[in-house]
Image (cartoon, rainbow, N blue to C red; front, side, top):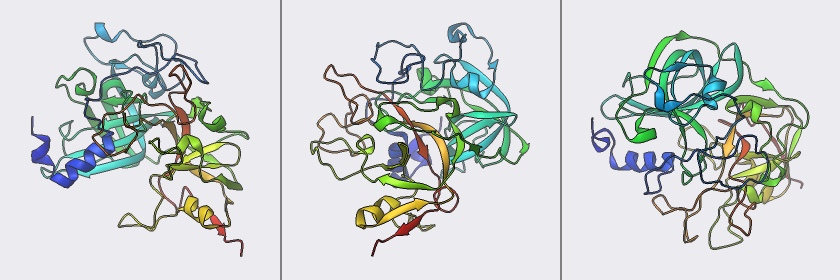
Length: 352
C-alpha cells in the first residue's frame, strides 16, 4: 500500500484528519442506536442498528463469500460489515474531494437510486480504492462495491452515520472499495418535502429519517429563528461557549453551516446568515432552503477545554440532550447546505 504520507503533504494530512474527525483512537466501529428509536435513546452498548430507518431483515455479514446486491435504502440499513454491491446509482452530492500527489483521489459523496431516490448513502473513497484515479463528480452513474460501516462514536459530527467504505474501515483489512463508472446522468431533483418537515425539537428528535442521505427542498418563506441553538453549540469548559456550528430555522429545522459560514474559503463568497442575525436585523429565505438531509452529532474533547483535532473525545451526543445517567440523543437529522447560491439564497434586513 502507498503510504498516506507519500500521498499527502503535511498540510493536506492535517486537513484529512480534520475531515475524517480523527480522534487519535482509531475510529472503531460502533453500530449506533436502537431500531425505531426517534427520541432520547439509551446506549445498549451492543450492535443493534444505525442512523436510519429499520430495514427489516438484515444480511449476516459473517457468512458472505460475495457482495450482496441491494438498493441504497437497503444498504443504509444493512448490518455492520455487510459486503454490498450497488448497481446503477448516481452521485447526487459531492461533499469533499481531494487529489493526492500520486494522482489518486479521496472523497466523500452521497449516492441515490435514480428510480427511487428518497434515501441516499454516504460513501467514503480512499486514495487507494479502485480506480485510484477516479474523481467523484455529481451526475456520475456508477456501480460500487464496498462494506457497510457505521461511523465510530468518537467521530466528530458524523458519529453513528451509515457509510459505504473499504474493508479497512470495518476490520482493518486491505480489501478495496471498487467503483465502475457507467456514464453520466442528471441527478434526481431535490425532494419537495411536506409542511411540518424537519422539526428536530431542539435536538431531542430525529425528524424525517425517511429522507436521510438525499437532497431536499424545504419551501419558503422561512426565517432564521435562532442563531444560537443549543444543539449546534460547541461543548467545552465554557457553558457560554460562543462557537456554534449552525443555526435554526422556524419550525425547529436545524442547519449545519460548515460550507457557508465566514466570508470566503478562497473561492466563492460565502453567506454567513447566522452572523448577520447576530449583527442585528433578520434573515429570511423567500424560496426556502436546500441541501442534504443527514445526521449530525457532536463529540467533545474529554477535558472540555478545546475541540482541536487530535484530542481524546467522549462519545458523541446532541448538545443539550445530555441526561444525568450519561445518556442522551446520540444524533439528530439536520440540513447540510452545500453552497449559498443554490441552497441558501437568503435576504438580510438590517433593521435600520
